[in-house]
Structure formats: C-alpha cells, structure tokens
Length: 155
Image (cartoon, rainbow, N blue to C red; front, top):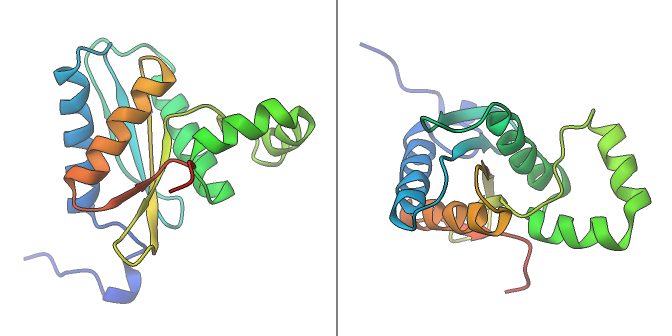
C-alpha cells in the first residue's frame, strides 16, 4: 500500500486538488462551448501536478498553458496583470522572457491558486481559446475545488 507523503513534502496543492481543478476547468470549457483546451496545474514550487490536453487541442497548447501558469507563479500575480504590464513596459517583459528562458506567457489565462487564508498553493494555466475565456475556465476550476483564484485583478 502506498505511503502518504510526509506533510513537509507537500508543496502547496495536493494531487487531488490539482485534478479537481483541471477536471472542473475542462468541464467549464465544454459547458460554454470553447475550443479544445489544455490545462496545466503547478504546485507552489512550480512543479507540474497535472496536465490535461483535450482531444483536438492544437500542438503548442501544453507549452502555452504551462507558460501562463509559470508566468503567474514567477511574478506572484495572475497573468491578467502581467498582460497589463507587458503593454505598459515592453522592455521589462522582454527581460522577463529572457530571464525565464521564454517560459512566462504574458496574457490572461494564468491564475494563482490560494487558500482561504490567502496562502499561495500554486497556479493554473489554460490555453486553447481566447485568453479571456481560458481565464474563465481557470477561475471556475479553482473555485470548484474550494480554493481562491487570483487572476491579478484588484479584489
């Protein structure tokens, strides 16, 4: 029988939480009629917990979804805010891209996951439809798991 992880080894989201987020996010996409999506859920340390790519999602969707989640986690705010900063400060965005090896994608669809006490647990990135619609699915998945989404907009 598998042993549970030592509590100190859990870095934010559990696998069960990550799976719940991904499944609910994809269900939201089907509910509102989006193009096929890919969802990536990272824990607080930036490690992949779950990746799910719907049938028909195009080639680079996993990498884009990862970049959205990674960008949010790297900057400490959702990619909606990162997109605003990219427009206002393109030089900074170019530097961020260089520093992250091109892994931060500065468009909506990367959302931080927090608990009720505002503790950062991880991030979710979705790609497949318009960025604003991808973000809607991130938010729905996080909320369905009983957690708090942080897309970078002021509360």
